Length: 299
Image (cartoon, rainbow, N blue to C red):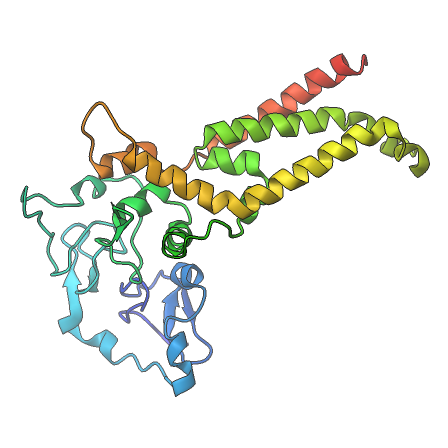
């Protein structure tokens, strides 16, 4: 079995260690970390396949291109701006980049974060996206950040508002709470609860084996209408979910505040995702459903 230890992943520019899970391109043989390969979606040298490119690994063993991260002591490539091991900001010269005005590390607020993140090599962490540094956007978004930041850039450059977000279509009440959009989360949760309660007679009739002719009668028309309304709303959120989230992210950075606050503080304190709230919402919807059905239908 071929060993890729001490070779360098072309996506995150970090060395492969013995415990790393490696994915090898079947065409050119380039090794990648599995997470890196899944993030990019294809081989990092995909554009060179037509030219007959074959990965040799020669440059990966050139120690001149290596640097020791001062935060975690792992060996990384010299041009790695963020350490893929500990996520600390390294800088473009192999040392912490200093702010010209303050002399402080521009990313020092992120070095002690309890989560791991890095800006992929395709995006410069200092790149300004609609006035916000890429590093701050990545920390704000966190989960699936590469997809969303790429979507944001595309929307800003082309002006388009639609795309497709399967999570926003399938379960908008969960996705909006997960992304901390509580207003639309509550709206969708209440709409789902209303649909569940009004659908009870239909579901009950279906379970009892009532004939389709009866189930297609006007008594159940409200359920059909509400179902089509919900489907239309979900399709709308599927199409505009990324655009809604983009506006939410950039408004968080740009809204006026009473006290001065840095972009990194906004990203850390207001960004990220919530796993607990969606679970609580699911529990509450089910709990209210169990209470409302007997009351509404005099059971």
